[in-house]
Image (cartoon, rainbow, N blue to C red; front, side, top):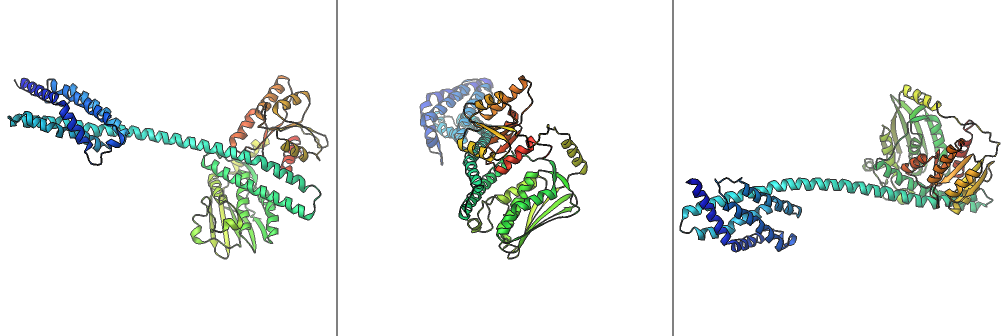
Length: 548
């Protein structure tokens, strides 16, 4: 009996709703559009809203038509819930909040109430029952909007996070590609300018002409330093920076670094001193090039910002660490700048960038390098008296050092050549200016140099003649240096010929280009601009390893 009454009641609700469908839907749409702060008109066409309301309303009509025990979770209502979940997901993607979507559903109550009041005007008990039933059903559907919003929002957040990671990785790749391309394009003309400057410096010039040439070379060095700083910082930030861990002579490295800057200090009439305590190990494990870079930067800054007095470098052992201090008698650093002096692009004061030059990247790179090596760096300063920059580096265990030295001693040995023998060198370089400069660098050496303009010519020349060394530019038309190196290695292997040293010459300074050169079969990698002294030294070390 009760089941029959329930069924008749819901069939009655179904019939009422169906007969008044257009009226109910019109009122419902009007109520939704009248909601406060409702972005519907901005984000969704009215036709879309009508389609959503019509679909949800049809699902409810089906639920009213079927038998029920006032059970909200029956199959037909679950279909309405599923339809509403789809609506909620769509609205969440469009930017609607769960409250806004819930109000969208709850507005149906206000649309149904006048129809129910009119239909059950003569039976207050049935009206109350109908209102309660409708409220329960719509409230349940309203909760669906929140559940669907949470699930959809979590998916949106996951997708956004994934997209942000992909975007960051893409931006990082674009940045690296841009920096590598920029470096290559700028280094190429710098190589020509600095090379011509070096050739002019070796020619007969008067005093004023020597001054002009020196200025050209200084400008090239400054521009090259700027490029290197930007590339180094980019590689460190991108996690593409790797350090070597090989034996290095502390005193020799410090003496060499001080010697590089001695002329600069002399020009400013500054005293430049250095001291290494007796308890500092003769050899430690580390990255020689990067330690030199740190020392050059700290000493260079000290000389740059000191007008009178001098600069002193002191190295001591402090427990299991190497402590290096660079002290100057310059103007000092304000206390409020000490905390940020190692941040990128920071200058000591607003005018120092214009007065002394520099980008403010050097100390940032020093800090990054020191910390990557496992050390710390700090500064103490007094205005009017000077500054002291200190950094520490771990001193590796002696057992590790001996192992590294043993491995170094077991390295491959080359057949020694006599320097009085005229070695033959094959040079492949497509740029006429670069080809002319490199040939001029080697003109007064005992070596004979043949030059070609691309990799294909280099390969043909190599297979027809005998050469002791090959210098390959990596970017050339017809056949690039990588392809030429691989072709030479294959030819040597197929014809039982010994391996001839190949040196890659490139304006690319990123680590992946160096690795690419080695993978192609090159033995060494020189980055442009290449100084005459560096080129000759590298060739000597390759041709005469026993005497280098």
